[in-house]
Amino acid sequence: MLPLLLTATAFSAPNPPDPSPKYSLDTSYVAQALRPGLRIAAEQQLWSSARERKFTDEQLIREFTGSAGFMGWWHPHNQTPLLATAELGFRRTGTFWGFQKEALLGIGMGYAINGGRTYSYTDSGELKGNPLGGRGVIAPSLGLGFGQELSHIKPKLTASWHVRGRLHYQWPYNVAGAPVFTVELGISRPWSGL
Amino acid sequence: MIGFILTTLLACADNPADLRDYWYFRTDGVDLPVRVEGKLDSDVILLMLHGGPGGSAVDYNYGYDTDLIEDAFAVAYFDQRTQGGTHGNYGAETLTIQQVATDTANLVDALRDRYGQDKQIWLYGHSWGGMLGTATLLDTGADVDGWIEAAGSHDYPLNDVYTAQKFISQAAEVALDSSVSRQDAMFWSEAGDFASSLDLDNISENDSLDLNQFAFEAESHVELASSDEFGEGLMRYLLLNPTVKSTAWWSGLWGGDALNDDAFTTSYTPRLGEISVPSLFLYGDLDFVCPKELGEDAFNAVDAQGVSTDFVVLEASGHSLMVDRPEDFAQEIITFVNTWGVPR
Image 1 (tube, rainbow over the protein chains, first blue to last red):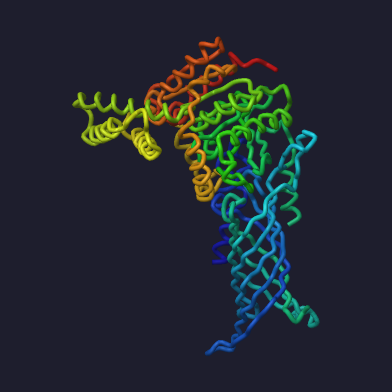
Image 2: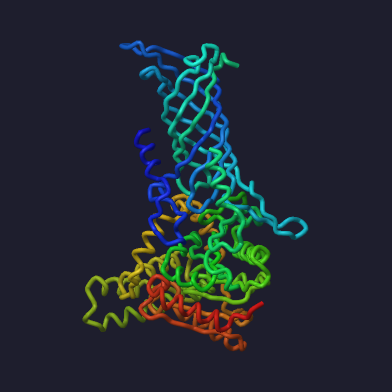
């Protein structure tokens, strides 16, 4: 799934279907169905359990995590380009060629900033624009990714880095105008690392 | 990430002279997405009031007629509360015609504050937008310069009567015409029978909805004009529309139902003579959803007050007359506004 989503994102680079200036800022067809974006997150393990697979030595870890991050995405009309989220997730991790492979199901709450300014009248009757005007949203998401413990680089580091492809939706209002596919770059810390 | 955010924020920078300006207007608990496109230096802004209720103004932003109108004037598209891409926290008690009309009037002020007090602002409503535009003109004291009603319904009860009468007369005509296909004849007969069964002085809400459904279905049993540009507009609409249809449909359904309940008993016909701004009434001769007689009534009422007005019926056009005859539709609007618009 991840290579497929990454390929979709690659094809969704600006490639206007209509050469007229009016539509030149619109992105490609793929981006209309799936907005490409980026999320930066810091993740903390809250609880975990580990077991070994029956016929291999692979260790499977199931964990609940909490994370906080920012995500932005491409929108043809720049409506709501930035979302700050705090998320609870269920992550399942295994090993694959020396890397952690993982799947994650998350549910987050966030603040979606309206794309473009949000204008409103002040008490004195002046029309003022607020670049941070927006709304609270609930954002379920699904992710697949891989990572590696940073102790491979420096033995004292207990955290791990990860890269995830994630599919997000926002509720009750899909403020992005379509599901968002983000590439997430993040740092995860185990419970013992606190 | 930083580059990504900077690019996005730069794209959102203020530039009132830009032909494509996107922002939100927060009023009475709701954030309304506003898109202003077209020729702002014409000093004329047409404020689009979309149909439904339950639709989105963006739906009107992809037709060929739009390209032509935006070559002459600026057009401001906004989604009404609960509909399209609106966000907000508001209760069901705010889903009234009066509240949506107040939102519209507030937006008129905001458009002038943002783009200049010298801008003429014309309301431009389609279908349900005809009800909203009339309510805004008559019940809010909005400072607008003109009114364009395209296949609008400013009187739901009378709309139902005209639609029923049109079905009865069409069924009678078709019954005498042997060249009509069997399928068409069956439809007109069924619609005519249904219309004849109604008590026109007391049409229930359910019957009104059924009548409306027949009226939309009628468009596939008449010969409508077709524009060569329709395909391109449809592709743009399907592929470039920023509003996700599933979400807009879901939220619009709730708001649409509440507004329809309010509209079901709302009749502005007795007050149409109070309209005091230049008014253009554009209707399709094959529109069963909002029959042209509604426009004729409005024209007569406004004309009787000595206000500049015109009533135009586009032939071979149904409810979406801007799709059926985009060039003629746009030209009628451009000519009327250029003729009767008064610089501020």
